[in-house]
Length: 182
Image (cartoon, rainbow, N blue to C red; front, side, top):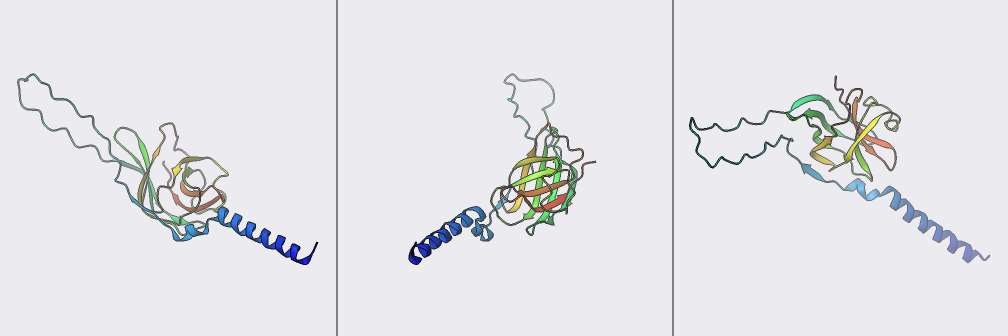
């Protein structure tokens, strides 16, 4: 094989390697971000249809305002593989539904980033959070802001001690927050 052919093959391999690395690592995400500002979840009361027939007695009063959510746990985010700030709160609404709420949240963008509740302690080895019990709550909505994640009704919160912003592609925690429901 001639030297020119070998150089052409090596050049082709370098180009393929660079393209593959770009597709896997998506380095442009280091400079992208998104923001969301979701309201605190509330219980929506059903709208009652007024009775068409007049009823004797005093006029009915307005329905009471919805009960405020109860905070079951809260903790401040700690950096993992990426700088991550904000507060994680587990809240329960009057109807028994539960949510994880991230407030004043900020982290880096990345591929395949999800939000978990896990039994691993916050601030631990950033690659260890998939070693124990975890519950995936969904894809990270945005890199910044206030966001809500419903916690399925069948999830037992006992023993789940932290929130993890997890990158599935590289098996690393971007950041964690301690939230132990006792």
